[in-house]
Length: 350
Image (tube, rainbow, N blue to C red):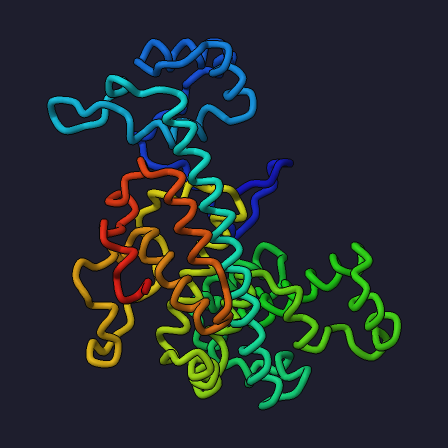
């Protein structure tokens, strides 16, 4: 591979050009007025000026995600570009508003669960290893077993490209924590500034119970997966879960949290990092009552949030708020959310 000056760099592979049958993306940008006309020509019933106003506030590509379920089915079972008769902007906009409000309600539940999980993880870890125990890789054995460990070729390639030794997973994780600390200092976060002023000459890293407050979902999840399983079992026991279930539910919840934070469409979300269905049918019979919630749909995650909130905040009114949202939007197709029609009387929700 040659650099911009034409100098050959040994050991650095050329950038892949991809498969020969790939084509360039050649769709031209359309003015908003043309976007509105295109949607109307495909059967969307809308006042043109109102539609233009919506498109000014909402990316066409984003709106198309909410329009997709209304696209007509072709003779071969494929979705066409045209909408089923009676598809109105008002109907689609109600679907969009339902999704937006669902994200807000979900985010509230996830916030409480996330804080509780991080709190318990850090609590058990610092009792075992002290406030700076996370700096020692031996205390986080999962990092040394990570599939992200650099191999011999990656190490050799980095040296050949004059990049030095690649960071190990534990080192990368600490670097992320340190970067969060520096951002907090620049943002004049009071507790971080106070610690840095008083102890910064002796400690470049925060004690874990402080760093906990700055962790992103990704760094918190990596921490949970790297902890010794004996400690993870203690955290799971605090919630009444086995350790495998705790890690699966944490990953699913944290992944959904990122989707909510980035305003992704979630109401008919399929797949992703879905929380597992609790094992041992005899100990968890309610999770096997028919009809069940589809495990790869948002209805299952809503059920997990409701169940977990019961462990975190027994006085929460979250369920009432969620039911109230569905009462306002009775036209929402429950099947696309993986929710049975009798869900409100299901043992997991009563």
